[in-house]
Amino acid sequence: MNFRNILSKNFPNRLLYSSLQPTIRPHEAIEQKRARLLYQSRKRGILETDLLLSTFAKRFLNEFTESELKEYDELLNMPDWDIYYFVTDKKPIPERWIKSPLFQKLREHVNNKGKVILRMPDL
Image (cartoon, rainbow, N blue to C red):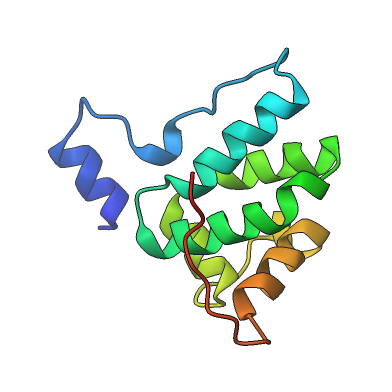
C-alpha cells in the first residue's frame, strides 16, 4: 500500500495536497503577480526550497515575460519537496518541465557553479 492510500484510509475526510487546485486570478495585474510570486517563493514552508526559490526569484523575476510569470506560477503550485527534488536531480524531472527554459534556468541557479553564498533575501 502506498502513502496516498494509507493517508486516504486513515484520514478519509481530508483533502490531499496534490488534489487542491490553484487559485485562478484572471484579472491580476502583472506587477501584483510579480509581488505575489516573490512572496510565494520566499514563504514556502520548507527552508531548503525557500532558499532556492527566493534567491532565484530575486535575481530573475523582474526580467520574466508574462508567459514566464505564468509558467513560474504553475511551478510554484507544485509541492515543495517535489520542486526541491526535481531541481537537485534527486528525482526524475516530470516531462512537463524537461524542456522548459525557465526550469533549466532554475536548475542552473540551484547548481550555483560560481559557488556564491546564497542568503535568503529580505521581504
